[in-house]
Image (cartoon, rainbow, N blue to C red; front, side, top):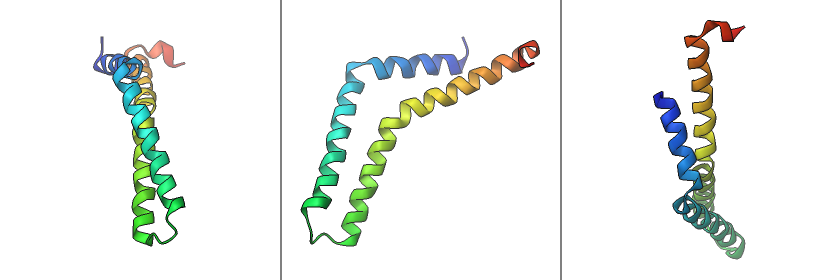
Length: 90
């Protein structure tokens, strides 16, 4: 089994775990909390608003990370498969 396949299996196990469900729930709550703090505080400085926007962006990227890694690893596996067996390429 290739390293990419091992990593892909690990990512699948992660996303199906109870731990990932907890991380997902907490990050979604943090996203809502940051958005609500912007909406609820009319006197917030631009720097604070930008900080909150950055925290929302970072939380969303964390939630997207497993899917992005799966896509990359799947592509890597397809390229390795084509490289190992040129008949599959065309």
